[in-house]
Image (cartoon, rainbow, N blue to C red; front, top):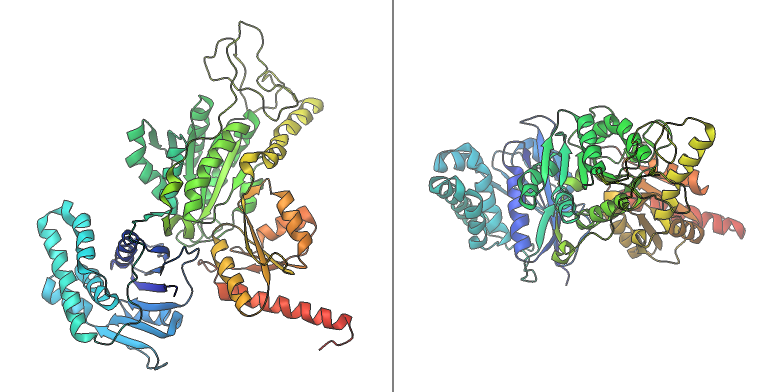
Amino acid sequence: MTYDFTLRVAGESGEGVITIGETIARIAAREGVHLATFRTFPAEIKGGPCMIQIRLSDRKVAYHGEKVDCLVTLNQQALDENLADLREEGILLCEAECDVPMEPSSRTAYQLPFERLAVREIGSRISKNIVVLGALAHLLKIPKNRIEEFLAEKFARKGQAILEHNRKALETGMRVAEVKISAKNPFKFPKGAGQRRMLMTGNEAIALGATMAGMRYFFGYPITPASEIMEWLALHLPAVGGKVLQTEDEISAICGVAGASWAGGRAMTATSGPGVSLMSEALGLLSMAEIPAVIVDSQRGGPSTGMPTKTEQSDLLLAVYGSHGDAPRLVIAPTSVEDCLSLIGLTFDLAEKYQMPAIFLVDQALSARLETVDPNTVKRAPAAARLCAEGKDGGNFARYRLSDLAVSPAAIPGTEGCEHMVTGMEHDEFGNFACDDETHTAMTVKRFRKLAAIEADPLSQGLCSYFGDSNAEIGVVTWGSSAGPVEEAIKVAKERGISVRGIVPKILNPLPHKELATFFQSVKRIIVPELNFVGQLASLLRSTYRVSTINLTKIKGVPLEPSEIVSVILETAATLNVRRASRYGTAR
């Protein structure tokens, strides 16, 4: 029997809610359990509702779950806002002072005085989350030694007194739970494969993957939800000879990347939508000067400052088209933490090979998601390098030579005999300023030919995920972190007797035309779920392939839920049945 258990912990920012969830997640990963998480928190420095949800399974999971089996709430507001998502047969663990609705009676509720225990027995209100952790450990039958090992690692560096303080809080929670929680719990903590699994966030995976791909120069300016990438690299990149510079703004960051890359290094920055907007002019420079660069965009709710701590997929058109003039760039969109680890390396390879900027498009949900990762994913080396000229004995060096190739050899500064102009102005083959229509047309064609070459490149093949029945009449196309909910929805639709086929392109510029064209020819209806208001992927697909789409958009700051997608699938299936019946004169 498959084990599948979803836990949500909710409370006030500053109460240690995330610590509770992350502790459970890290212990589960050490036990060999598969998991995926989602967290949400307020934009305020302190205060405001936050929560973390963890889905544990004995098989690989692509989504953090919809309805929860166990809900832990640390205050009344958290209970009121999250109770609707608890399954009817679920378990509620909450603060004793909370007013708990009695319906439905099939739920089991346990109310414990977490805050009173922390203040009276531990002497510190901030220990409340560890008391909760102890009660939860008893409820789920998590081995005490596993939690103690984790606490020792987390708090030992802060001194023995702090460690003992937290051990006492843990034991207090477990002891009280032993008295208050006597019913048999059907959601016992799972036994995994016994082999520890790697556990990391999307941001950590991006930073690690970029380092493995040979990135040694990072320039960045802090911005939610991408800041953790720079923080991770600041700790670890110097160990492999790399450099991290926190710049005064995003414009300086992208210009630093341009300089380091022009000098021959693999360079990167990480930002969010507002930062990409500021970088748009430099993106045009990178395209014009044919300098490789990688820009990570962790999308958040917009526009302007928008909702900094909430997720959204509203930068797609900015990533593909965001520049004055025609400035081609590569756009890659991973669907999971494991994708973040592997595809960031591919992004560097393609950017270097085709001497152009590349945008790695994630979002807050994926950046902050904790997910188990196959350790073999880490074993990777760069698969492509920049085409560079060898030294010449004098003569003019045609840096931007027009030929049958998509790229022309670059020259690292100091290469003898390869001196040339590098400018944001339109130029001829030698880099000299030229603004005649013939040169501009020829150079624009040269730069855009790279996209066609990438589409045909073996490195970019296989960048689509497929779900469901290959013979289905209903097709679903999505991108990025919405892939998980779509995969779940297609499974649910199948259980209800409806065949659906799904495709998720992970390269969005250039689009994988062969795969998408074949997919569109095989289905009669196309549903496009995504986290933005106007349906940006749907718009891109309609303008490129002249297909009709059924848009499913959401801008609530949280991921799509499978049930939302299933509802549209059911409506679409009903429409198909009506049309089929009408054709034979039996319309209902």
